[in-house]
Length: 224
Image 1 (cartoon, rainbow, N blue to C red):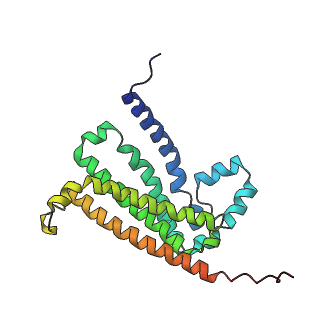
Image 2 (cartoon, rainbow, N blue to C red; image 1 turned 135 degrees about the vertical axis):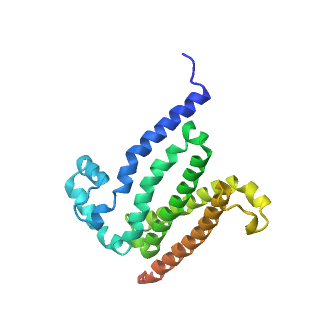
């Protein structure tokens, strides 16, 4: 049996990624609905109840009510757009979409806008939540903080590589055709850089507040 060709490997990888994204999209999009409307459908919660136990899920959700309450809207924006990204991403992997240049550009811009908006929602939650109040504590807060920063930087790098030619030619803003795919990509890149900078400042400020709010430990007895 001959090994699969590179083209076949790419097709298999695209199919696997698509299946995983299609399964996870509704889980991500509905994850926080019960916090806004009690009893609202949440596929992830439904699966977890059957995989673990209803008592465990109820207790776990109860600990999240207070931290999520003051950031519920940004978190819902983050989760719903995250589910949308799970659908927009695979759509760009297939030749049928890539052959349609205008549609492909629209998908690219929509994907980038959704990334920045979703990560901004996550950054607002982290900025309003002390590290000790995050799920699993400060260590998980740090991990959560690294994810939006890395995601925004990754999306921005992709836009930079796609708009390098436009930036090299455009010396002034008037030289950019803002209605074109490259012009729109350049605008999204600028918004992404501003979002990344703002998110970083918010995260650092929240971390500083969490550190200053932690009382120092009482000194122990001196050794004899």
